[in-house]
Image 1 (cartoon, one colour):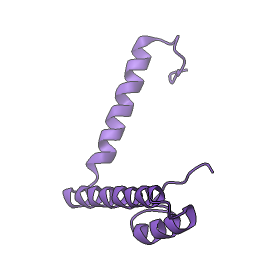
Image 2: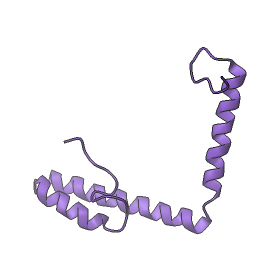
Image 3: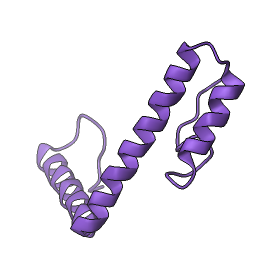
Length: 90
């Protein structure tokens, strides 16, 4: 089998697999224009600011319900889901 993911596989096969993954990931990144990359950067900064605001809200003792409602408003249009693409386990 060519795609051997075990640690005991042929080092040449592993190198080919690794290089293939690098090339494919580079090709995926190359598909975005400079404008799209800049927009992604701004979205990430917006999400980070929204989450920082939620953390400060919780630190201020406003309560989870209030802080999550504020986070939902701050995240609107930035990312998937109500919480800017992040969800806690609790």
